[in-house]
Image 1 (cartoon, rainbow, N blue to C red):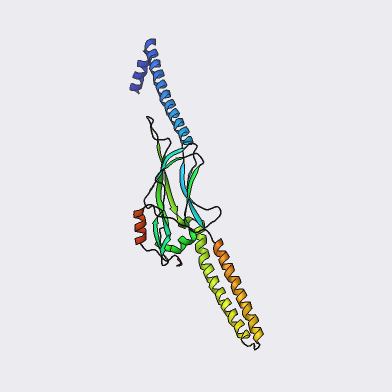
Image 2 (spheres, one colour):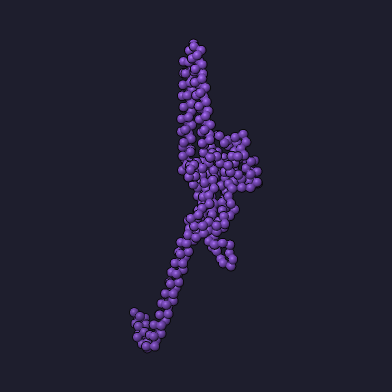
Length: 277
């Protein structure tokens, strides 16, 4: 208590000049604090504005609009400014089956051809390419990778000419197991195979029953009529199969990124293209 009383006495004994000096120092300190706070707020607002108008580039997988089993790789700029010098960095680059170079039903696996750099992607603009067929990839099974981790790197301006530009990065995870059409293929494949085999047995049973009854006929003209009917039915089936082959989903033909990758892909044997996973 004595110390507090001594300090109070010291303050009350000060003259007007001392109090004015204290007031001035307090005003200076308050002004400095206000300047620091204002500077931080302005810096934060500027960063927020730059964040709002900067490019935002993402890479993802998307089914083709007209053919669901064809999967496309899309790079899209969702930002409000253009992205420059867009390039990719993958821990394990995306792969694709080299269907055009298959031998004896064996499909090699090679690296998906991606551009080394995309010069510019305007706001709302995108770059896309056909990656692979979900049907064909499901048949390759474990002989081809299904998950790819990497990043998309880009800048908010062109190559610097005395002006500094900022670099951005978006992490990328491309997983075929998470893609809905792929799950649809896997679910449909086993069900359709079982149903198809059952229908084949029913067809064979119906043909055997037909043959058993038709073979009991003794008139030659009836045999000739039955034979012509079977031939017409066979031609109808052949025409239907030929038409269906023309209407089948588009086949995918992707080549390796470079000759070295192509050579490595051809030396590694994949699974049979027509072998079910």
